[in-house]
Each structure stands twice: as structure tokens, then as C-alpha cells.
Image (cartoon, rainbow, N blue to C red; front, side, top):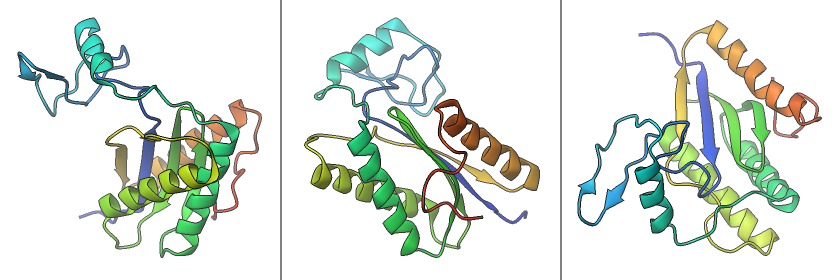
Length: 175
């Protein structure tokens, strides 16, 4: 079995990529009369599914402000300092974040759950935002090949450059 080099973790802000989105979605959509609609299946854009998801939302969609992003950066930095893994590339935007995390032997599901919890707590403590910060779930790919690793670094760094930042703008990025 190939050795895991690391993980590309993507977390979306709350309410910005709902089931039925034109980009597609892995989310489950629930309807009182129909129940779950094809759970655990990639769904194409669907106006009905999007409407159903919008009707179920209890909070407004979240766009991370600069103070919220600063809180996320600080929390990720603290998590990285306390962990055996490193972050090699990162981008934290108003709508989502990308983290490229080295493999450390820890359970990645628990690691990313912890990151989401710590960043949410930091946003609530350091800003006036109340309510959810992140969408349920996440996207996390396992990286086994050096070329995939290198391409992911470039992909994430390009996000930062497009926004006029340095390729590696955060204190926790190593490598």
C-alpha cells in the first residue's frame, strides 16, 4: 500500500454550497414528504434540491470577514503548534479554506473535526459573529504521490496569489 504523504482539506463556510448547487454536491437533501434523496451520491445542480436546502437553513449564509479570517488563522496556528502534523500550504478565503496537512499517523477525521471546532470557537470569541461558521461536512483527499502533492501546493498557493497575497501568507505554513 502506498504511503500517505498528507491530506488536502477543504472546509466551506456555512450556507454557501448547498445541495442542489449548480457546481454539484455530495450533501444529502431532506424533504418531509420524500425523505433523503439519494444520500452519499454526487448530485448535479437541481433547482428543487437547492430550494429544499434553502428552506431548511436556520441561519444566514456566512462570508468570513477579515476579523473572522484572522481568528481562523490564529486558531489554525495554535493547532499546528500543538500537533505532530504540519501545514505546507493554506488559503483562507471568505467562502472556504484549504489546508494541505502532512500525514502524522493521527486520524485525519478527528484532526479536521478538531480544526473546525477550534476555528469556530476562535471566531465566536474574537468577533461578534454568532451561529455556525462552517458548513457540515468537509472535503478531504488523501495524497499518495509526490506529483499530486506538488500540484496541490501550487493549486492552493494560486488561490492566495489571485487575491493579491503572498503564496504562503500564514505563520503556520512550513516546508
